Structure formats: structure tokens, C-alpha cells
Image (cartoon, rainbow, N blue to C red):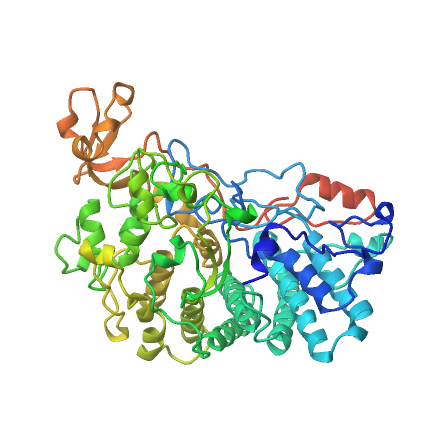
Length: 612
């Protein structure tokens, strides 16, 4: 763990310590790489590699940063509803989309970067210098390892770019400033690009070290991310009907990479779910492969815990559709559950009747700080909620939070694995999923221990998923087999507020879920007895605005004197659907200025399909 505080807090990408023998005025800048004095050995390579960490292992970001963060960054999905009109997909080609800066570029409606190849170039510089400068000074094993590290980051960046834009130009070397034909090459097809990523990752799995120190990139961590990336591309290629052979190849690699982690026996599900997201330290956590350390003494803090503290407002909050997706603790969809009160959506009943991840993710009291009245507190401790109405301690207030961020955990690996296996079995001739497979993945998650606070509330573990008796969900899409539907449900419960939901919808070709006109439950929260649970909500300013929906669909609007009638599903204030969108929203357009720039240089940049 030694390195991590300065990896994410102090060390700038490629910083090197220059010779103290130089005269003071001759010293090169200490925050930039000086090629003539860098790349000497593994120490320099390691320092340069650390510069990639905050971009790819973002965790909770720092300060009030939201790029690639849970809760505050990934707020664009069908799980969440905001007041008034919902955030919309892009509706026109932007005037410009692109940057050459290494600063993180982020588009929340695509859950990925803008048109920026600076990180690709950075990876290629890394590879070039390892080969041309450092190679004579290190062992063959070290050369292979650091080459694998650089190729891992290049593959990671291209996955991000492809997830946003589809076809992108592929660069596998540093391009000279005067090589106009290469600099202004048109897009390569996503299949060609992802085959290159596949090759990079195959090299990584063969050459990266199993152990390179505590909490740093190694074969296990790389394999876990590879399982994510190959699952994404394999299912995207499959469900969008792009290339069945590639889909199969990528999904098989996802299984292989996941099994490398799972078969190691190094991690397990012996800690409770809540502990993963609200612990001051994740050192030694049995489920976490990699984590990001936060330390006030090093001025490395975040705000994600604060936005789960019960008081801070996120603005996009969990809706009734999400609530209804949680499995009852007898392992059945709520409509068919035999658990008492399983058909109640009052919070007091939900925490007792649903999978334990519900109670660990959502506060058990309605709060007006949530647009839906259901407040997500997955990333704050139970103690943090005791400060509502009081002054928060630094660890749960403002931007001074110091809880550690899970970067990669075993739960994702096993869910990537079981989904890849299921899709291969269903569509690509793979071996059938067995009960043993479910026990090793979904049922292992369900068997996590409960913490004492959850048990005291009456929370119970969820019954195992049985292959011979899969739940019959009346709202299952007709084109999704029951097993795959349940795997998707498990991901939704496991990763709520995290990175995956919008990306999952995109790869499953289910962006239609973002059309809230298809289900009125998108505009509702839990069942609330407003005068009892939210008395402060019924003020004069809410006359004509505060509404509830009865079980029979009747809407009651607060008129200043009918408080006793305000019992029902909480209606999100002024909520309306987002603007209409089409399938072109699966991918982002490039900017007009980028198209023009290519044309002025005598080249052509093809616009994203559907955006011409």
C-alpha cells in the first residue's frame, strides 16, 4: 500500500526526480518527464505507470470531482429519476468534440470520454520508451511486464472510446507531428479496433506479473478488468448483430479472464455488502482486489460519502421501477413471492422483504433530500445518517471524505463470468450453465454475511437462485431468456449507483428503457404516508405540487388542507419524460469542427452512423 497515497495524490504522470548535482537554475521542471533523464530503469517505468491510475482506477475521484464516480458521475440511467424534465440524450452534432489534454474527459450521457486520443498517445509513448530506451537496462521479464502494463492501459482507453463512438482511428505507435496521413486517418471499424484490444489483453495475460507489490496493477486486477471489457464488447457485438464470431471470441476471453481470478482462491465473500462501500480502510478486505486510498493528511479526499449522507442532494434518485426490480428474499419476483408484505412498497417493508442489498443501499426512511423520497446511502456508513440535522464530521461532510474506494471487486468478476457463460450457452454453442455455476456466482453473493445492524432490522439473506426453478417474472422482456434475465437483475442490485447500468443497457440493446413514457412507475418513489413520514414536505409552497398516487392510480394533489389523504406512491415533483431519441443515441457523434479540420487538411473523417 505504500505507493497509493502519492499515486493518486502527489505524483504527476511521469514525474521524475532530477539530479541534485545540477545547478539550481539548470534544473528541469519536476512535474514533467525529461526524456534525456527518464526511462532509466523500473523505478522510472513504475513512476510513469502511476500516472495512469487516477484516469483508469478513478474510485471516488478527488474533491468534488464527478468524472467516472458512483453516485455523482453515473447519474444517467433508467434507475434514477429527477424533478421536472429528465436529462436528454444528445440531439444534434456538437460544434466541437475533442481535446488533446490529459485531463479526464467525461460525458455522463455516454458514460465515457470525448473524442480525445491523448491517453492512447501516452500509452504508445510508454511502449516506445520501454523498447528504445529502457530495454537494455532491465531483465527480459521486466521488459515483458512493463510492456504488458502499457498495453493494458492502451486497451482500456480504446474500450472506452469504442463504447462511446464505435469506430475510431487506431494508433499502435507514436505518430510524428508531420505524418499527416496517419494523424488524419479515418476511423477503423470497431471490430478491427477491438481485435487489437483483444491482442493487447492476450499479451497482458501472458506477461504481466502476478504480484508487483501491494495494491498495484497485476495479472489478477488486469484479468478482472479484461472480463469487464470483453463482456461489454462480446455482448454488444451479439445483441447489436454486428459479428457473431467476434462476440463468441470476446465472451470466451471474458470467461477465461474471470476464471483466472476466481480459481486463484485469493478473494471471497466473507464480508458484508455495506462494508465494501463505506469503510475507512479497505486494506485486507476479502472481496476487494484493488482499492483507492484516501487520506486527509495527504490532502487526498473525496465527496462521494457526503452525497450519501442523507442531507446532500444528488438530484437523480432511485425510482419505483428500480425498487420493483429487487428480488424478494425468498428468491422470487415480488409479484409471486410468498414473503409477507412482499407486495408493499413502504420502506419499512422493503428493507425486510427484499434482498439485503436493498437495505444496504437505501435509507429506510423517506427523505425530501431525494427527488423520489428514496435516498441512496450505499456509500456512507450507518453512522453518517445519525448526523442528519446536525453538523457532519469531515469523513461524511463536504469534500473531506476519507473512506476508501473499491476499484475492482470479486462480485463483478463472478457476474461478468456467469453472464458471459450464459450468453455463450444460449447463442454460441457454449457449455450449459449448471447449478454449480450459479452457486459459485450469484448464490455466493447472496450468501454474504449480514452485518449486525441489518440483522437487527429483520433483514434476511436471499434464497439461492435455482436453475430448475427460475423465478417467473411477469415483466420479463420476451426476447430475454429467464436465466439471463435473472443475471441482469443480479447486476442491477449489485451495482446500483456504480458504473455499469447505462453501459449495460447499451450493450444489451435496451436503451428503450430510458424512454420513461413506457412505464408510469419511473415517475414514482416508494409508498409514503406523507403527513407521518414527511411532515415538513407539506408546506404552503408545495400546494398544487406535492402529489401521491394511490394503488388504483388515483392522484391526490396537496391543496393545503388534505394532508390526511396524502398517502400513496410518492410522485416526483414536476417529473416528465426526456426528449425523444432513436437508436443513433447508442453512439456519440464527432464534432463539426473535427470534420472540417480533416477536410481542410485534405482528409475525411466519417461521421458516426445516424448523425450525418
